[in-house]
Image (cartoon, rainbow, N blue to C red; front, top):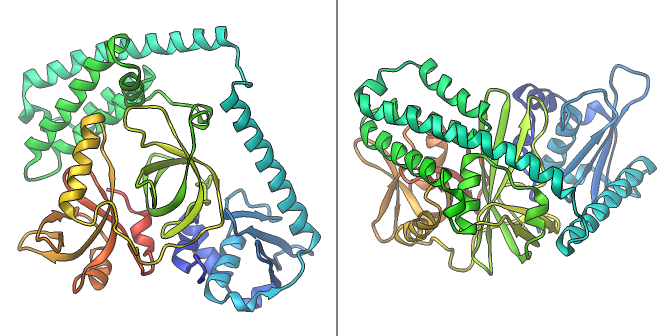
Length: 448
């Protein structure tokens, strides 16, 4: 089977453009004094400014990177350069026994993984118990602050509605930033996010009034639900808390029954705000048909988790966070990544009508849902005013007007139907990749 690694996929792991550029500069055999590979790792020695060469190694199963250079970026330029060469010509890496510095590192990773799995089992069985009294006190303090924030936001929103949408559109960015900052101070980042989405709707161009009214309705519903958490069903209360910005621990997810399946990593999308990057990775279970959203966060130059790669699949267990929809998830265990290829069976959203019906059912369970994965068999088309996706039944969905990779996408999907991975937000699609062809780097790194 072909390798899941391409140069675009390697560059997508770079923590920033400078690291990607530097890594490309090191993707030359002349920069390395030794290269090797085994069935689980690749490694190399890269001569730097010091006397001894840097020892660079990559665990192909995750992937995970390690280098002896002093860089604080992860992966560093040496890891990127090494993997770029491996993606281009794996045969240039001699197959040999792993040197000690590779074997020891892999053994330490295995040991940590086993301890993590052991903890997960203890969490699932109830053996790991925190201090309940201290935890309850912290939770009560947080909830009180959030309730104060909800009350303040209700007053702010009522005043905004009273003054009218036209007046809201004329407000400058500082007006919206102040309101969002107040919600962050109240430990309700979900409300801050909703305020920013409302601001974005007011400046979104033609039809902004409808989009702004929709965001006002969602925010008002969230505030009403958040003010009466005790009266909600347990599952709905969890959804509301998540929408308000309460985090759920990984232990809570790992305590849930795992879903074993062949999981397709159909696409990834990265959003950036200030110095924080958030990446959504969308998974679809081949047998179960379940969708899973895996979230990763990184601040500043810190790396995003490189263990999931768009256009690959793995055998493994996925645990879902509690809630009425069961979408947010965490990967508990997985095999090595392999390429997806072209789907051989029927995909969950083989038609646009089926995809929208599934989305509507999900939205009924979780009305604050703002992103949903789709896997469609369709081709690209264009009207006088916009690009859209059209399936074989003649139904279509618009593509985001500001989507920057449209011409690259057009070169793949303009003449015949393709298997398209995309994210739908209720208004337009964001293409994430085409199964059966290379995932373009722009598909993975751009966010609306």
